[in-house]
Length: 193
Image 1 (tube, rainbow, N blue to C red):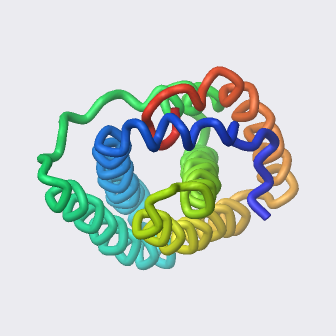
Image 2: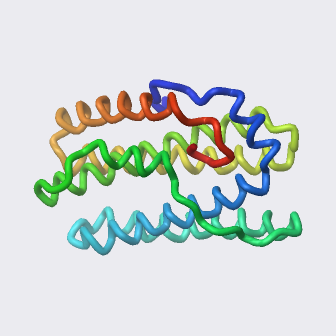
């Protein structure tokens, strides 16, 4: 369903299990960044009323997820650690050239967002199925369902606002590029890396 061309190496879960606190901190910031992306889309493209409405709802949901993850960090006797660079996102956003029309810029941002949500969904599925901590596995199952909805929403908007044939080609090309990035990742205690 997600269309990802390279699945996550299942051994990534072993890294996660040895570094749950690091993963939770990274995950909290992923949720915060997802909310920030939604706010940025509102600010950059206020004339797209339907998109703005959906992004308002997404901000609420993502900050709710941030709180859920933050609450888990506190329950484990920890505090939220410092944010760090997301190597996956840094590499991914180099795919589309900068500039172009406003519509092109919007479509590219929506495609990036869709892919990040799709990869998160895939990672959460893996965690929900493989983590030994069943409570945490159930937590990730719930988040997986939510991320799938986000992925499809972003892709739907990209196809709505751009030429669908062109958007589908860009999506396919972006998926191939992302698969190449993933060959060098899945080795760190981060949600995407």
